[in-house]
Length: 151
Length: 85
Image 1: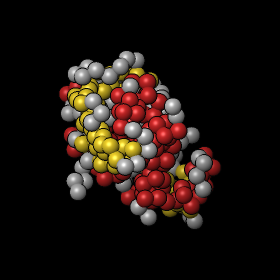
Image 2 (image 1 turned 135 degrees about the vertical axis):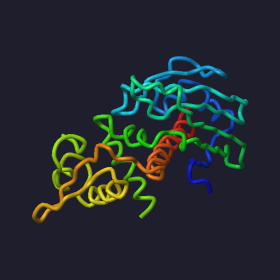
Image 3 (image 1 turned 90 degrees about the vertical axis):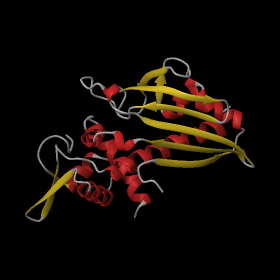
């Protein structure tokens, strides 16, 4: 297993068309991803909006849609925690988020992967989490989940 | 007052400021200390923790945190789709 990417697989009790809509409709995506996107996703275009996660509301998230193959594959690139207005993140290689869908007996099997983390400068990883005033609380919550999964 | 600002603080003080129990806070501080994000110093009977401002987060810790965020997001997706309209 490649330890420099994140891979998730979940089963959702709903038809593929319904899950596809939840991923690619910008308002539905925003509801579960917690971002207030201003416009629909479009291939090759940048979708932009403020994070709706408590403590991070001042952060703007930008994603560039790289693939939209109806009801099977949706992908975008973004810069996780691109939070410093003085930094030109466009010079950094973004990470790639990919969603793959397949019908399953229970409804839909969804795979999500995020890759390209090795491209984030080391000094930005800690900064991204700890810069924000609420970062400590968020960090601790995340770490608590990590600790629960890795006793 | 948070760990990222000001002087080193004890587990009791940090737990009081958060919703975590002392036991949970101790576990978290241990993980963060291993990740070299915080350092500790024993003063008398108690350990005090301070943020390391130039710390580098190891890739594995970073991935674990991002992975946990994805878990939360995907649960919200599942709930939205299975329980919503």
